[in-house]
Image (cartoon, rainbow over all chains, first blue to last red; front, side, top):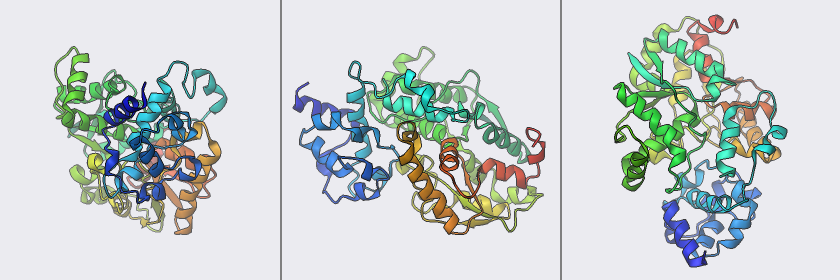
Amino acid sequence: MENKNLRDEIIRRSGVNPTKCMRCGKCTGTCPAFDEMEYHPHQFVYMVESGDIEPLLESKSLYRCLTCFACVDRCPRGVEPAKLVEAVRLAAVRQQGNNHMTANDVPAKIEEDTPQQLIVSAFRKYTK
Amino acid sequence: MKFSYFPGCTLKNKAKDLDEYARKSAEVLGVTLEEIEDWQCCGGVFTTSKDEIATKLSSVRILKAAQAKEQALVTVCSACHNVVKQTNYAMQNDSEFADKVNRYMDDGIYDGSTKIYHYLELIRDVIGYDKVKEKVVNSLAGKKVAAYYGCLLLRPNTVMRMDDPENPTIMEDLIKALGAEAVVYPYRNECCGGYVRMENTEFAEKKSNTVSNSAKLAGADVIVTACPLCKYNLEKSGSEIPVVYITELLADALGIKEDNNGK
């Protein structure tokens, strides 16, 4: 997909308008995973806005977002960065052969007391 | 009073205490929770992308089942509550999404009209704390309890509308009604590390330890939660104080804990 098309598609699917962002960085300040991300939430918003999607599609940052909605609720402009991260993550895992986790990975990662919630949540985020 | 009830996958397996103490405590408080028939897992997380339809159908079926019985729907698990409530909000407010969902279904239109209560809201808004106080036979006086909300109960606030998302009191109010002291601490509404534990245990442990240490430093001797994943993450990360379900604390105060599972 052309970058412009992909950018517009990400914006449409997420329902987010990144041009509302005023670059205050509060999303990154409140993000519990920000120090695990090569692209922090405020950078993520800017990169989507400018159509710089390819590096995001390749980035591990996509799988560190907890979807805890801290950035969504605390953004003074109502930008909702987590929804952009989700739309880009889906664009990545929906590509053929690009699942971030497969059923075969699961047995090695779980223990006797692992709650089902952990497995189904990770699967929904990392797999299509 | 009767309500439709959606327990969810984990409450049938690793979080049976959360489920059974919820049902039994509700009975003591005059409410019967009628489990929805043939429900499916909500998926654990709500996918915010507007073009994700199929992953939300199980939630819509749950909402429709409650509507068919003309009952409000009660959830206990924080994750189920978040997913079902966000799905219902999308059915009410996103007509394109609702139209696509309804085209999948072969048994009539769902209009988003089912009312959803989290168990904590059921107690606050329907049962009332005075009724709870009346039924307490084993006061928890002297116990210092830290409520852990995590992320799913409160956010996104435009949808969840449970309480003030930055300064909630709904769990503390229940703790006080049970006679215990509610300990307020800084990290009570921050994330435990959630599902990222599946791919990065160290990171999830760091997040969870921040929460449990924060509660311990504030003087708590126990943490309560409504989320099986929060409980698991906090315990597995080595919380120095016990983590129990809010429904277990409730059952304890109502004097029915001994009857459950032979404990």
